[in-house]
Length: 317
Image: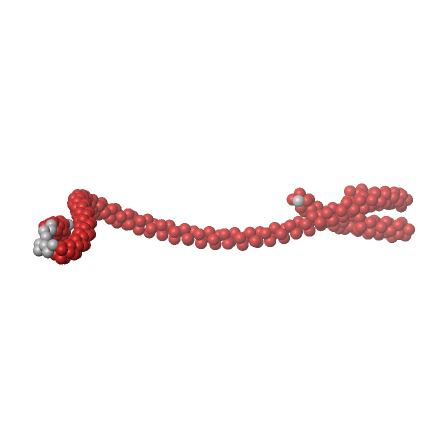
């Protein structure tokens, strides 16, 4: 792509330079030939050769028109033409006509060859021009695209620069905040160290208090164990008393039941005795019969002693 652009620029510069040189050379050759043909015409008028004057005039007009059209291809033959014209001016009219005819034929063949070359060159230049135009259009599109991208990149770069400035300001602010935070951390660190020392002293005092409390707790546990032992002993005594009370109550119940049974039996025996007494009184008229009343008195005394045991058991509990 860069080579094509460079070749296109070189081609344009060469074409412009050739056009300028062609115009300059044509103007110079034409200005040089006009005075020469004016002198030739004046001489021919003096000599009375109107025919030669007309031929020379026709030659000059044709040559001027040919060089006007194809002058920049005929730059190489300009010096020879000028020399032939000078030599023809010095010779006679017949030699001038022959030379003019030969020059015309040579120039015609040269012009024909040059026209062919020009057609080929024009065709090649047109192709190269079309290619150059297409390349130029493509390059122009690419250039516009790149210009657009460059503009976008410039805007993006500007945004990045603004962001960079903002970030730089933020970094400076953050550095100041970090410095202030470091100072604050140093103050807090010093305060924490003081608090740690005070806490260590307080911990030592609390350790001492904990040791004292542990001793008191040990004493309390010992007293509690003693109290628990006493309580267990009391509970055992209470259980023993309760068991004894239950046994006494059972024995009392049995004694009461036995006493009730004995009373019923005594009553039955008394009734039977009374009946027997009545019968015997009626039969034998016996005044008195002995009966074991002392046994019943002893039984009643044992029941009273058993009842008197209950308050003692209650006192024991």
